Amino acid sequence: MLELSEFVFGIEEKPFGLTYSNWTVKWWKWILEIPKYISPLFDPDGKNAYLNQTYGKVFFLCQTLESSEKIPVRTINVPKETSIFMPIINWISVLHEDGETDEELLKVARQRMDVVKDLEITINEIRLSTNFVKKFRVESRFVNVFLPENNIFGHPSCKTRIVSDGYWIFTRPLTHNTSVKTVGSCSSGITKIKVNYNINII
Image (cartoon, rainbow, N blue to C red):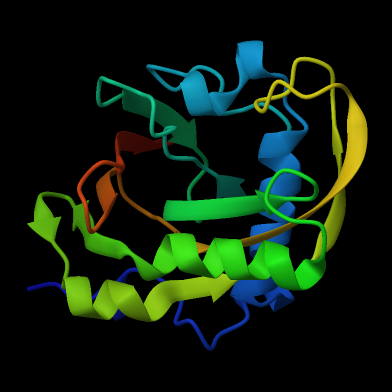
C-alpha cells in the first residue's frame, strides 16, 4: 500500500512556509468569497476550479456539500510542480449560526469532526491507509471573513467570524497526471462527502 507520506507534506511540515492550519484559513477565505452560483463546491466538472487561485505553486481544490447527490468527476489542468491543497471532509462554525462565542464555535466544529468514521483517499487507483489519513486532522485559528452577496450560506453580505476543523491533504509538487478520489463520512452514515479529480499536468 502506498504511504501517504510519499504523496503529501507531513502534518508537522510547513509547506511553502505556512502550517496546515494557516493554509486552511486561506482555503476558507478562498471558497467563502466566491458567490454560490459559480462556487467550485457546486461544480460538476471542474470548470470553476480556477477562480481566485492566487497562491502560485499551491492550487486549492474542494469537496462537495453534503446535499450533493452525485459524485462529481472534475478535471483540471495545473502546471508541473504545482501542489494541491484540499479537504477530505471538514466543518466550519459561523458566528451566530453555530454559537455566540469562540468557545462555542470551536466546540461545534470539534463535535462535527469527532463523529467522522470513514476517511478514504485513492491516488492513481491505490487506496491509502485510513489510519494514516486520520493524522491529518487540522483546526484553523479563528478568523474574520467577508461573505459576498449570494454566498454559499445564503446569508446577507457581511463580515463574520469562523473557525474550522477537518481532515486535509497537501500534495507535494506534482510532476505527472494524477487521479484523486476522496470520501469522508460521519459515524451514522447520514453525511457522506465524495469527490473525484483528474489532475492533468501541463
